[in-house]
Image (cartoon, rainbow, N blue to C red; front, side, top):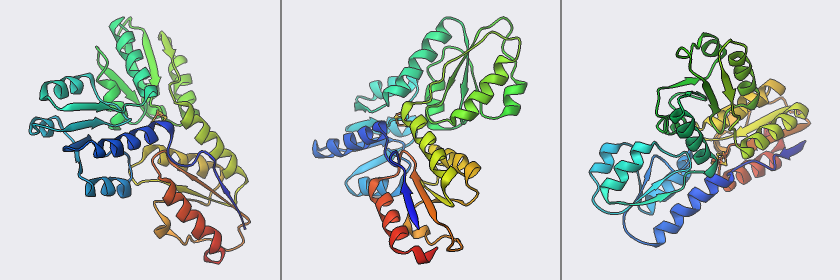
Amino acid sequence: MEIILAKTAGFCFGVQRAVDTVYQEISSGGPIYTYGPIIHNETVVADLESRGVHVIDTPEDIAKLHAGTLIIRSHGVTRELYETIRKSGLKCVDTTCPFVKRIHDIVEEESAKGSQIVIIGNAGHPEVEGTMGWSHTPVTVIETTEQARSFIPEKGKKVCVVSQTTFNADKFADLVAILKDSDYNVSAMNTICGATRERQKEAREIASMADAMIVIGGSTSSNSAKLFEICRKECPKTYFIQTQNDLPLPLTGNEKVVGITAGASTPKNIIEEVLKNVGTAGRKF
Ligand code: F3S
């Protein structure tokens, strides 16, 4: 059995930077909080908790704190939340990914010029919620073809479309095509980040030649879920696992090529463990 591990599997630049920053802050002492889990990975979050890094989730939680450092994760937050943190007097360490920050700037500028903002992404995802908070005007989030077809902008308004950084690139193109097909004045900026594009492209290539495909990611990681979606299109035997504990998989044993990829918040050691177990226990399949 040949195993192909994607070169792009695991932490992207933005996640690595955010996680490294939290570990660096631990050594500076004092209570440390992250606004939401720093990444969608329970193992890393539990390790940080054991080192005194606590997760808080709401502006009300911030109001209860009187000292310490608050770290903003790579997903970014709303403009209003920056203001809440500033007023709290907590030290703010911002690890918003520059690619997310760029979308905030576009949304802020374009909405100030009067455009209606559409975000192609998952409603409720923290990055999307953060981005919405930079618009001066109401934002529409579109995730499905039905939503794109039924979208009607405010009369006479220009529409500025951006994307969640980790959205499925093919789906983004399809949804933009639907929006542009209307008579509305639509301009779209593909703001899917380069790391995501590369990861999706490589996953698709590997899945297209694999007899079975493994996607490793946290249960709440939306970029991992999208990788699963992309791989399954190419390879029906695609499995989503969180750790090596989810092995063995229900395979026949006749699979010659097994591909492995992982989401942007999957730590290296989890990928290595899966790789070790898949490799040494071919019989498990
Ligand atoms: Fe940044 Fe893209 Fe990662 S936006 S956090 S490099 S997935």
